[in-house]
Image (tube, rainbow, N blue to C red):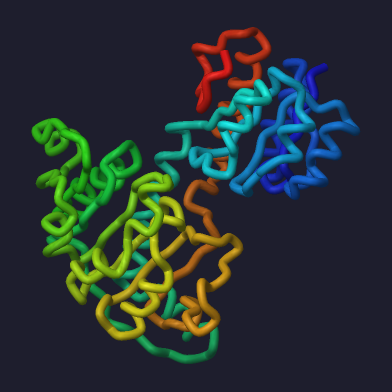
Length: 326
C-alpha cells in the first residue's frame, strides 16, 4: 500500500475521491498543512507522496520526503512549492491543469453579476432589517477586458459574449489567431497593449499567472489607465494586484469597485492596517473559492492521484511535471 499525505483542507474537499483511492493501492492520509508538523507526519507514517494546498513550503518537507516522491499541488498555481529545491532532492512536482477551468470561469461571472447588481450590499442590508433596493446595471453591451487569454480567460469570454452579449476585449502578450478567438470564444479583439485593451472597459477580469515578473502587475500606473466607472475582478492570484494601490484608488473614487477572490496573504491580511479593503463598501471579498465546486475538487483529486500513479509506474512523460528530475 502506497501512503499519500493530503493536507487537511484539500482532503476534506474531495474526501470521497481520496477514500476511494485505496482500491487502487493508494492510502490517502489526512495531514496538517503547517510544514514542520507535516514533515514530522511524513516521517512518522512513512508517507511517500504528498498532495498540498496553496501554502508555501520552504525546507523541512523536502528533507522528509524520499527521492522519487511526488509533491502534488491540489490545483494549478504552484508558487508555494520550491521547484529548485525539490529538484535537488530528486522530488517530482506536479499540478492539475485544466480541470478547474469551468469552475473558476463560472465564479468570475458570478462576481461580475454581483458587482453589476449590488448583490453584496443588498444582501447585507436585508439581513440587517433594511429594505434598500438599489439600481444596478445590465451587462448587455457593456465592455469586459479579459487580461490573460488562456483557458480560463477564454471560457470567461465565451460566457460573457455569447451568454450575456457583452463586448469582450482580450489582452494577451503572445500572438493569437484573432479569427479563432472571435469565432470560438467571442472576443471582439485581442490586443497586446494593456492601456489600449482597458481604455473603454466597464469591467476588468484578471487571468494571468503569479510569477516574479507579474507581481503587482496591477499597480498604481495600470490602475490609473482604467475608467473610473470600471470594476476590477480577480479570480487569478492575489500577488498580481498591489492591494495598497487598489485601496487608494477605490477610496478616492477613482475606480467603481473591486470583486476579489484571491489575496496576496491568505487568509486576508491588509498590506497596511489603515488600508484594509474590508472597510470599503465598494469591495466584494470571498475566501479563494473560485475552484471550490464539488465537481472541480473531485477532478483535481483524481488528477493529482493520477500523477502519483504515473510516477509509481515511471511514466514520467505522461505526468503534469513542473520540474525536470528525470
